[in-house]
Length: 586
Image 1 (cartoon, helix red, strand yellow):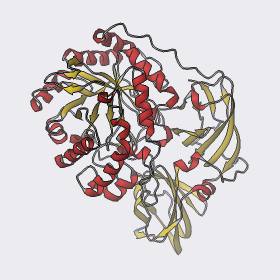
Image 2 (cartoon, helix red, strand yellow):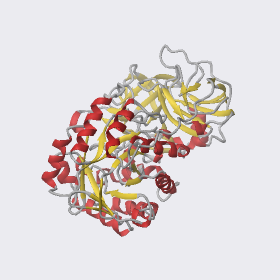
Image 3 (cartoon, rainbow, N blue to C red):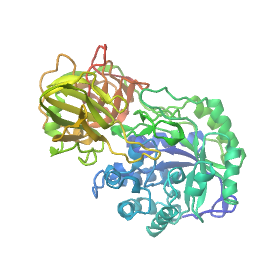
Image 4 (cartoon, rainbow, N blue to C red):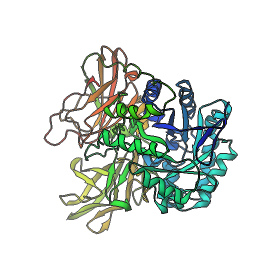
């Protein structure tokens, strides 16, 4: 057992100054069987600590329905076994380019802008969640023989709000539940962020990607003493569907890291290893500059982040340049990197054998159908990730009028009398061809990810404003939601022959593997959807790019026959030729 505390100028471990050389690695973005390898890579880079968020919505998808909270504890045990310390960031809000910033949809749907405040309607579920989660942390603190040195209060709160009473309540809750190691806050190095996000008596840290001296000078204006720490050194960046792949020059990142350390600061690389947004948990951002109030920008499935350890666990040029800098601060020679994970032995095509329409899938696995005057939101239908089928009748007889959707989030594929009529988005919410009555209209609305940062966190999904025929609202809307996790077990879905047009629906197939190992899945000509291999959800694919393949962790595959399911929302991309999905070595 050891004592870790915050001194006037240093972190102190059993009274001795210590510098934290940390790297972010999120246990929920890495297959559990690969934790040991990734942690060994961090040690080989020269780090002595690992940092992880905890996504509340992953572990409590429904109120009181906790799911595998013990996974955090298992990860912290793996951290200790790897010879590293740990920093835990339990939120309740985490950002992290994660769905809804980690907040459950059932919380934000009910509370709106009252989340992340001292409102009791928000704090009550937070307290219940922390009581369930924190024993995984408390028993593994450094003063109890574990690896945990620091626990964060909220996350970048100064970028969002100014409710100091809320932050104080969270800090008190952490203490009451048994957290005895030092607490800290992290915010951008700007006056309004540090005043809004820091707490008296709690270590304040700053997040940035460059200009360490200026950032630490700003921190010193607010805190005259205490260790300097960059709690998020952004050594790379993330990607959005339809955008460019983000890359940061490795030498530039190395120089920025060296500057942090020359200032005497501790550091947490964000990310040291990014991993993957498995299961459709990728979040989204809003464009529009500092206001973050513009177009929706969904995050891709890969969270590679241009990190020093790439998505498949391999060392990049950035790894070796960072290791060169970090080696000067190590107590001895750095260990060699572990052997690279096994790669797929040979390419293999998926043999597609069956298909069910989206309607059949919703009928078999969807939630209860509702009927109401106006369209219900995803939150009202208890859909976190997935799709909702809305049905409405255009009365008749009446002449053709424009049909539009008010408050559409995020994308809708529309059918009129069973024929596809177009795809609508937030920015293009009116069908190109008018609709005459009588007509039956179906709108399949998919969530592309909830906003994870900025003032629009927690905004509802689905149709939030209504359906208009010319200027008249169409009332009497039937709706049925399909949660993505319902497809983790597809028992009960009746399959038929493959469609001739490669249209939307659920496809079943098999792939025979010789030499199981890390792989990537190609889906040439497919438009947008999700893939499961042996019941493991690899995440969303999209023809929008820049991500072109899905990462398949080696432990997901097995020798011989593997089961594959593809949920395609739109069918063949325009002008494209659809071919069977295929595995190749990563």
